[in-house]
Length: 427
Image (cartoon, rainbow, N blue to C red; front, side, top):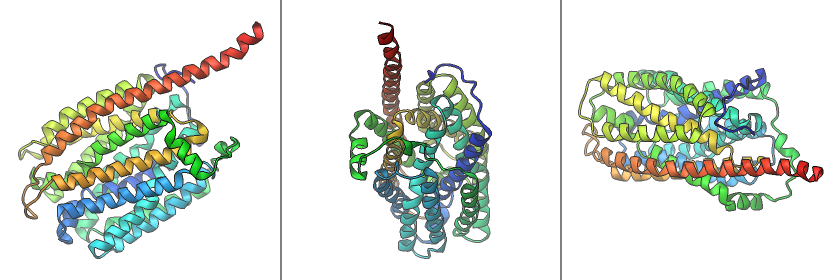
């Protein structure tokens, strides 16, 4: 296994390119389903007369159900063809999203988000497992850079289009759009993707519960779980209230909100491939640390801004995307090198579950901290959330350094094990 500090010239095969495209499209729809709650937040709370704490519960409902789903499937994740698992949960995600569009009351919407989270929350972990099975560690920075372009594409195309049709019809319309697009992608996965079964060749006599327990018990794996928990706490605490803060505190109109997300999305599409290449060519952990420090500086300024011209707010949003995406790409690529192949599905499921659990906790805490007296009054204490996010981001750097050390130590051990038989034979 090559060192992450060496230049990489490995090219993708045509089939690998196809897999990257399919996983990126899948990521696009799943991320859009979650991200669209941000720009629709102000419209949704006013349409259903929800408080900020209730909206926090709507966001957290997806996260908590995704956590439960990930834990329940972790023990079985390495016992099936990963393509079949992807299709099963993607179909469930499509149905859950359809129910979101059909919801007419607050309880119905919460229930619909729970169903969507039960299925959609596992898709990311399955995609990561497929990526780790089909690509070497020295390719994964670039792969994650392209797959995570679904995040940027959701803002460039998905969110602006969602806002346009929501303004033309109502907040439910974007969910119906996601359902139609996801159905097409589901058919493409069924027809084009080959079975992903290499992990089934490794003998695994563990039952599901034992497999889950041994994965969670593994000391090295827990370092990865801690790192992702810190990342999720920092991300989910601010994100759900981004549009409400922009509209009510920074004076951005609903029409300009579309442009705000579009510009941030375009920057994301440009940023992620760059960070992916740099992460493979240089140190993933150094790129992660740089992005965290950048994000801390931007967040501390952004959460204390007065009303400013739109172009200034756009600059700050682009700067935040640099920090957010700069953390995501190298961290996910690096953490994917932690589990052994036979544990990869279980590890990624627990990884994804913790991501959503801590995200749900963060959204709930954020909803308790943030206050809005009336529907049009400014959001209060958003800067307090910014301080908390900054502190967590700083701690996450040390957690990721630990993950990097564990991977290097294991790689050195594997290299020594390969050389030892040769030495014995010479002796």
